[in-house]
Image (cartoon, rainbow, N blue to C red; front, top):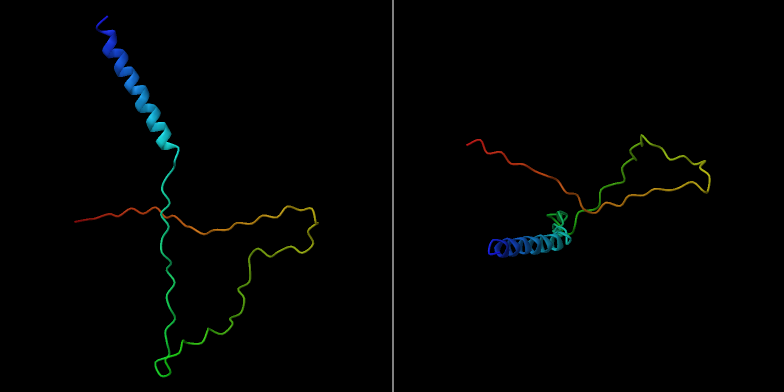
Length: 94
């Protein structure tokens, strides 16, 4: 009988720890948004004003042109991307 009490206690502790771990795993990773990487425009050294915008450049031809003769009931697909995650490994050969 004395053998079963510690066994039951350790089993209950393991079940409780497993429950706590599964609840905390449901929250997912934290959101770490990065700062913007836009650079300010250089100012004209003579006048101190911002440089004029670049002139319009010709369009780059697309490899996948849009088909204009699609029926009205055809599905449309769209993707909006705001965050890019890149996995990086650093090797130190010292």
